Amino acid sequence: MPYDDIYLDACDRMDKAVDHLTEQFRSVRSARATPGLVENMRVEYYGTQTPLKQIATIGVPDPRMIVIKPYDPSSLDAVHRAVLTSELGLTPSVDGKIIRLSVPPLSEERRLKLVAQLRDMAEEAKVAIRNVRRDANKQADREKKSGDMPEDDAFRLKEDIQEVTTAHEKGVAAAVERKTAELMEV
Image 1 (tube, rainbow, N blue to C red):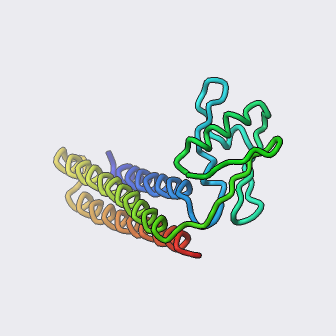
Image 2: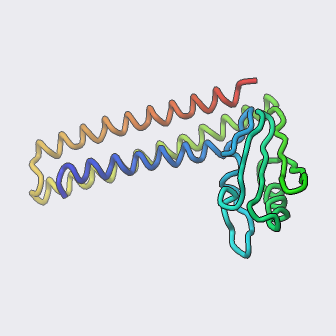
Image 3: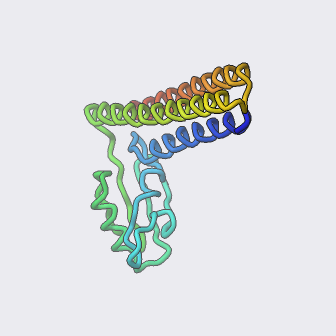
């Protein structure tokens, strides 16, 4: 496997780890209402677990309110049940053909728990990034040992992989800082 293939594969896999983390962060409740809180919530829709964003319009008319309007009015009860049984801790109110979710402010204790949860998620992403680095370094060693890659190229590849790893870990840290600041705002 040539230098570029190993490098690009590692970069792609690290990007996916950071993207997954930011997607996870969208579902963590913050001080204000966002569609990301509920859009990936699974709803029992005609016998299939379906993401809410595929069966309803999700709006945020103000910072403390989420409005969900199912495309199919018969799915209103299923959406209501999904919100009630979710881990969000929000109580939905059915208003005709829409569901309103009032998002109350977070207590200081709850904010600190959520920040700890963010840090745990970030650590998992960093572990995934480091695993990609390890795999790329092993691949470089195999290529060097088999004679398919010169020793200098293998050494340079390992250095480049380390630079990319450091950059992605900084990206994870920046994402945690942004989400933490969002959580801690009053």
